[in-house]
Length: 446
Image 1 (cartoon, rainbow, N blue to C red):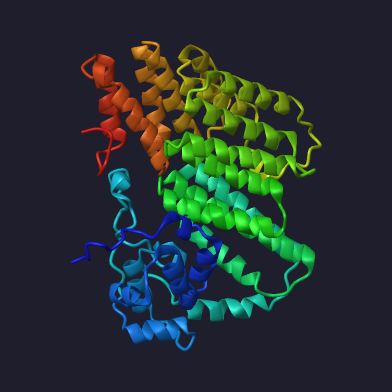
Image 2 (image 1 turned 90 degrees about the vertical axis):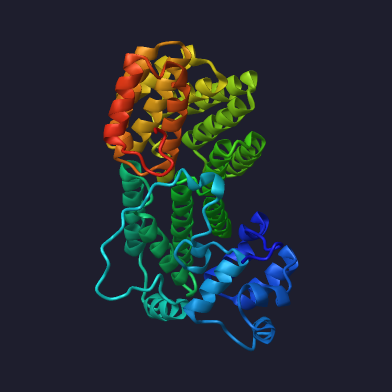
């Protein structure tokens, strides 16, 4: 039985601290234990008790006289100190999902039992030994281009199917690239590797954010910031901060959202390489933050600035690949969503509808996400038939993508529909909802 004073998790400021992230990545338990002691007030005797270790063993580890390599010990430390599994290269621990989000998780289909037992994850030292062999090979510009190509593929698959299924591949490649960084290489190659690792860390954070697993997302976003900072890539740091700002709006922390996007804009403006498209995207994220705060004047001002910057875009601009998605339909739909967040449904509806007509059909998550926003603005105006029709059309792409963010917007629309639940159009929508998205744990319908 857990001790009454046993913390459910370590302080977020410790879990997102770069020193802690780096110590966990290489399983440096001496450093981990010291950080836990100084930053969380958990002393060696308490560490020993919670991790089912002897005090003398913990003392030897802290003194650097002993290493902890066995997987069962690593798992006991993760569970005893509440260190998320991914930080130590483990599968997600059973206790990780916060209770408030537990009902929003999709059930994962159970795979058939394998003939031979498969370990939950590979032991760190064995993996490090394998990677050490590969890091001694020479890397070329073509190798970096191959890494970037794989990242582009991850982005496409994320839009089409959600990030849940591809996350293990992204994390695996992130660990591999971080391993490559341990070798000394020419500056151009080394800087390229840092940029690739930063994008892989950001993408991993994004998949956790899309799954509404916010602590894990923040840890990877922080890692991405550190990697980008190492090569002074201020544009990319701005991109990561913008992702964190968007997450804060979902966590109902609008003040944090505004602070993060303001920091993102500061980083972007301090770089001579920053393009108008990047500044336009950041202004739109600022508009989201102001809209969540309910500030109409500031939201409208940020929207105006986003459109002004977008008009400055030239075909010859050296836009980074991660911002190319921010095209005219995306600008328009985000403008509509910002108005929708303010409660300006009549202004929002035609903008979102126009963008949906022009949005790529391969972006399943985006189409579902934006269609539910359109349905909500229609319902806000009393257009019940249109809202239910729009939401019904959104169920197709919603069922094709594993995204808790999309599911969350479906739940919000379904709750908004409550006063009209017995109307024929609402009953038809619910029937289609049951057909395409059968009830699972935490489904939005009974």
